[in-house]
Length: 271
Image (tube, rainbow, N blue to C red):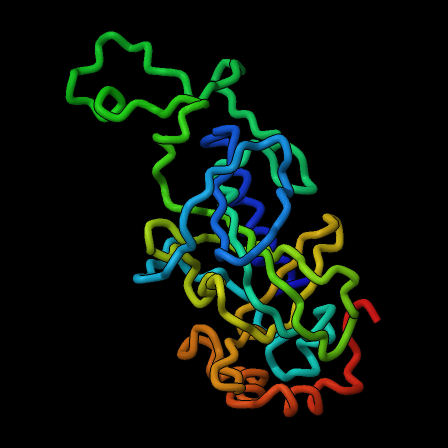
């Protein structure tokens, strides 16, 4: 698993918190104009908005406390992932307020007061003694069914990618898969974890990718195993963050032909 489950645990905590905050009953999707992606949540009513363009970046969460042992070399990273692939990003979907997560069902989260009574996070304040300038009066919690007031930054997104080529490892049966990642893009601002930039629609990446062992269809990619393809060569994401790792030194500036030679014969997790 990625980073000994560090990234996975963080994603699931963020996702559960987001679902608890705002079951708005719909998700917000964005996609490239030429993409033809079927709905993965047929019960939802998607809001289609223009393709997101990242014009600024904001670190919405601190260090993810990655366990970086897998980044010692291409060989060690291959052993903890499933496939080495080249992909192009087609579309994204904000799952921050989704009533349920694909493949996982609705979030079962309930908090209780000191007397054991369930707390409704969307219930208005019933304290008549609060002054009119109290934050609870000025900023009441949003209605469960009011997506217009769900104004916080995205906490969990998934990206529809097309597999251009499987260079090594497990050959994926589907030509298109979903990659899940903390954060997302809203109003041109990328909200992301430190050292883990969000994927961007329309860009082509090389990545070492794995599937969640307990949830079918959930794919992950670790930041030091993800490179953007520019002019035929691999450019690392978060260029200054993981520069001391061996896998970065092996692959930075390489072509896909170079990568094919490096990964040929390596043992991947599900082989």
